[in-house]
Amino acid sequence: MKNLDIQFVKYPQKPIASEIFKRTRYTTMNKLTGIITQVQQSGAILLIDINVDKHLFTALLIQSATPPDWLQTGKITDVVFKETEVSLAKNLSGIISMRNRMKCTVRQIERGALLSKVRLQFQDHTISSAITTRSVDALELKIGDEVEALVKANEIALMNKS
Image 1 (cartoon, rainbow, N blue to C red):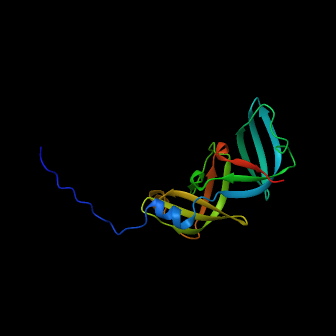
Image 2: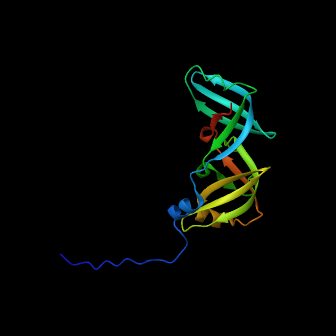
Image 3: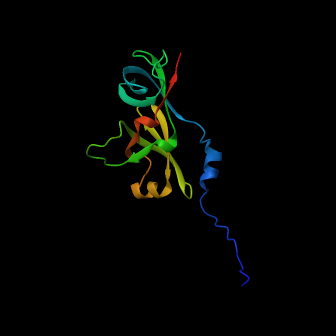
């Protein structure tokens, strides 16, 4: 058997994802406050529409057959979603199945070797997206760019605001 000489090389490149997570406190979630405008139910599946500053969000939840009292039309709730669940698109056209689409402006890009954090202005709110650095490059993202942030309805969580 040959003796293999393995060398480890340090690359003085951009920080890896875990370093960005530590520096930027990726543990925070995107959170917007809105009013429930519609609740549809079929068995334990709920489709809930929430008005956030005149912008409609939809959450798909799986609950018990009897949903909690606070999941009712007119109730104030927090719409919560992870940065890692926010996809970005430029010049999006056509119809897609993603229910939650937000027109945003890129405010900040923190690039890592593999993962980047993009801060976005959505109306009067700041939201974040964690996407691959390859995607940042493919989209040719720059500060001030107009993008669409997309979140699937099943990735939206609702939190009681009372």
